Length: 167
Image 1 (tube, rainbow, N blue to C red):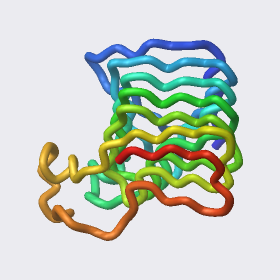
Image 2 (tube, rainbow, N blue to C red; image 1 turned 180 degrees about the vertical axis):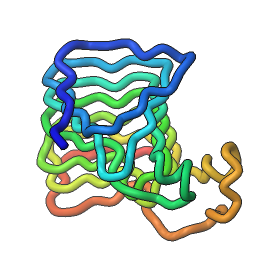
Image 3 (cartoon, rainbow, N blue to C red; image 1 turned 30 degrees about the horizontal axis):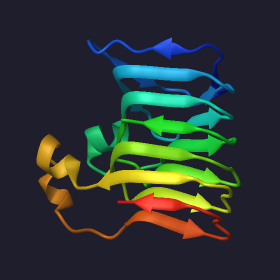
Image 4 (tube, one colour; image 1 turned 90 degrees about the horizontal axis):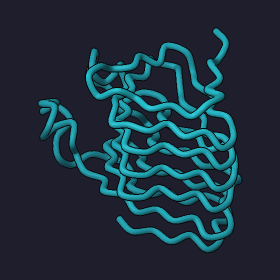
């Protein structure tokens, strides 16, 4: 299935869920602003282009909601100067996957994923300020996940130059 391209900034409405049944490619400079909730189907992801922003959005894996297992990648950063602010990402293997980009900021974001943020070969003052915690167990009743499980708050791979991390 082809991906859906998000070409213009958009606001989500808090009174309903948006089903992401095809991957989203968010164009350069586009903002997706909540409050709102995106439910991402298995095998789909949201790719953020250069200078794009995601603000006040909750993103949950539908595989987690339906089967109680972590699956896929929530957000992929594909460009410099991406901002993810005041979001919540839950139920994915990777919350934010960022490879070969610069100045990525993930700020005031709550994440319950196997690996909350993976930075691979990132350069030039990326800033990660997250709260990684078992939200799915304590707020959604997924008791089988437990409080302690294997995973990473922030994983660094390859050269990561001038990265500031607050967890």
